[in-house]
Image (cartoon, rainbow, N blue to C red):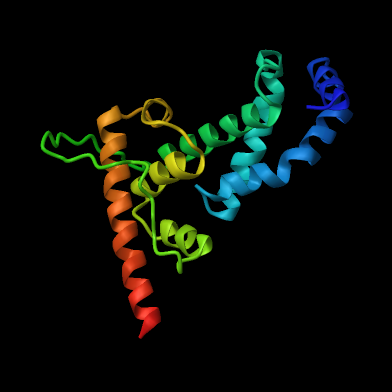
Length: 181
């Protein structure tokens, strides 16, 4: 982070609204895109706005050991999850003792399938699987973090990821085969 950026944050901590607008302008585009991963455009705008309000209200808790962007991103994701919870998105606890956990890092798809096709396919998953897949695959959270964010057991996070991954593979395999013929 640049020295100017650090000065802006220090000014924000003192309540400087002009500095807050500069920070907002610098981060609003990226934070809106993150919000759109979880919510429709209108709800994403609301979540982003609420996130900035929370961030500026709690800016004293920001520690420079993390980048400001990553700190803000976590606030945005938590705000999106809160909005999903308000809509009563259920993350059902599963009790599947015999569920086989495969390699969670194996996300290999045909090289002929583009990143955009994968991202589009993720959008068609059941919402509970979609959220866990996005938090794991796109945001890079581990199951303990996802469990904390969504307030679900780690086992449920793993199950939703596995089911989402299997559905995603089936969907992409079908799309790939249809495109070939």
